Length: 424
Image 1 (cartoon, rainbow, N blue to C red):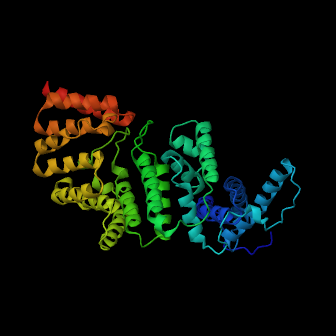
Image 2: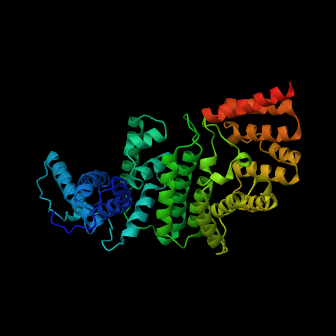
Image 3: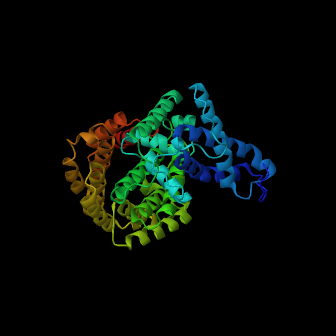
């Protein structure tokens, strides 16, 4: 290949970071031009493999994205030719331009590269897919994670994840959706779906629902990277800014969140000198700018709450009245049991634990909390603050039985054991 070479790229991590950024752009360009999502993905993966092999040795090309698109397009031509041969179709395929039948219906050849990535996100988060399928397809196509990596992150067999991704691709193909930005009337709804998928990926990474570790750094890192990408594509969307800020503010506390044995450390007991101050400053600027647009949404309000926590020099300095006010505003937009649970905690910090416990009574019969451990854990904490040790131990133990996280189970059992020891 006789393309001009740019600066030498000898660092493998630098190459991998560049390829991870370019991969969804290249995939989007191929799908927009040729259709055939699955074939395009295979071709892009082979182009990425060629780049990983050649660039550290020979230096990156002057235009890395064009190089990848050229290599992937040629490989896609080969793959489609093979497919045609297997089906006994003899129509020749041009080296660079495929027949019109392979173009995605309604494809706009003049779309910008940034739109390609955004459309790819919209495609992966298509409403025809289940949330689990949306997450898997987004991590595979936009995040660039291998099927094995996604399976490990979600603790399922690779074959199971491969089937999930395959079914998701087929469902998108069968839906007949065109590779283009949604009509203006659907933009907000589809963007909200993308935001929700990234939010779910981050939450699963930050508080893993199963497995030996409390968090999975590869998922939180990937969610933040994709949220940054989304923010670059829609910089004027206040909720996207709020989502990125929320992730940064939450992840900034990760270094102080677990002890040497992996056990959780509550927020009020964390060593705040370990928090990532650069990430906090960046996030505070993002959420301040977003709220300044006077269109506060759920992600912005959650980010604002996280910012109040992160800006407090000590746990005692936390402005709980402001947090309570923000939760009350959030409840107007997002009235779900998790928000109500956190609102009860904030109310307890402002008005006393018995006020918080009374607010929890309304959640006792909510089926959405009945399968988890958080309601019992919060009750145990508030009962402990009230001095009702026996009831606190009972709820800590109930929470320990309900959680699927071994790290949280050990923490809750130690909490209960410590109270029993104190009482004795």
